[in-house]
Image (cartoon, rainbow, N blue to C red):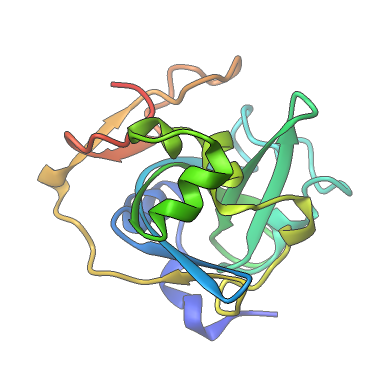
Amino acid sequence: MKLDNFRWLDIPAEEAARRLLGCELIRDINEQHIRVRIVETEAYDQTDEASHTFNGRSARNQAMFKSAGHLYVYSTYGMHHCCNVVCGPEGYGSGVLIRAVEPLEGLDIIETHRAMTGVSVTNGPGKICSALDIDRQLSGHDLAKSPIRLIKKPALADEQITVSKRIGISKAIHELRRFYITNNPYISKR
């Protein structure tokens, strides 16, 4: 089912990864709100060896084949969760890994979830899911609805965005598919 609210993400993963920078996620937990700005992303799609969808649809990755505007959540090393915003057309496995976010509201909740303070609270994909209490139960979630919503913000200018190689992968390592807001203190690695 196509989500009309997210036609702006019905684009290739690399374009969506750029476009999501500066957008916000709002997480509702026990009648409290956490609001964060997306500051770092990575693009993945089914033509990409490093993507979970490279070998086709499976029980694990089925959310990435939904229409743009859904959430895909997976676990790494059996203990950390990572989240992607699904993009592109329904049936085509593509998404944008949210690598780092900047807290805007609810920092006290984030710091409680992470048991720490400072930029390290949300400067990595596993840290984000811990800070926002995101797990596999939210995989496939419609990001137009609570408990986690994606808010579109104006696109950033190209000169505000740095492009580099992705982090922590073993295939397609030379692809320039990582995007981040230049000089933002919350990015995962310089």
